[in-house]
Length: 94
Length: 237
Image (cartoon, rainbow over all chains, first blue to last red; front, side, top):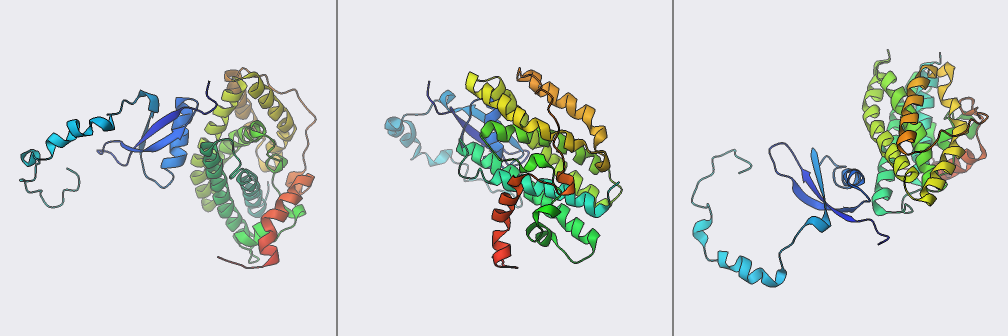
């Protein structure tokens, strides 16, 4: 067994209505400890109102070697962007 | 019943001394995450001390502010309980001290939040939320260490044993804190049960901190904490 505690990814929701956003990671022996470490590390300046922690090992990442095949086809498809709508004044999050 | 000055001074000294003790862990904790957690708790405590000592200074009415009370008093004038001045020892000993103290402080501050003095009550209401987290953090570590490996269990038992004789002082009738004992006993027993630990054996209680009779540890702590203000009075940065 490794002597290091496992790594957990931390997601913070800044306010109601917004999604949880990835903030960083912490080491912890269990989920409860991970939540507390996340609270102490990432919300000490009022950054959030809700926390998620996920074992880093549970995350499946895309392969950087496949980036060209995965992402470049979207480059020239400008019609997929919703840039032709006007955003009403005063709307902050869309 | 103690005067407002005495009362606020005791509360402030408890928080100040424990905050200073915990901050000794900065840069030395077993993990970065634990380092941050202990520093956060220390900062909460120093913040409480600032408020309580400011109130004590105002109640006294001799022009002493929080800094004057923190940095320009000698060891005999400190009224903190003996528990908070005990050395950090290993991590389990630090957790044992925090566990016993925070469980008590949370109960006490909940009472103080209903105190007749409005300022005292407001400080109590603000601080009790911070301390609820300290109590939760410490009791979870008691369970983790007590119910962990053979070594962590041995250290947790030793830590609790070393701190146990300073417990009775917390329930000093002259503070009006004696009534908190049954609730405190119940909380401690519940966590120890979850940690599959037994209650430490009764020991002869050591008291005196509230009257300024301290262990030799407090003088060393103060000499480090007060050095700068003693050498350069009024220095700011």
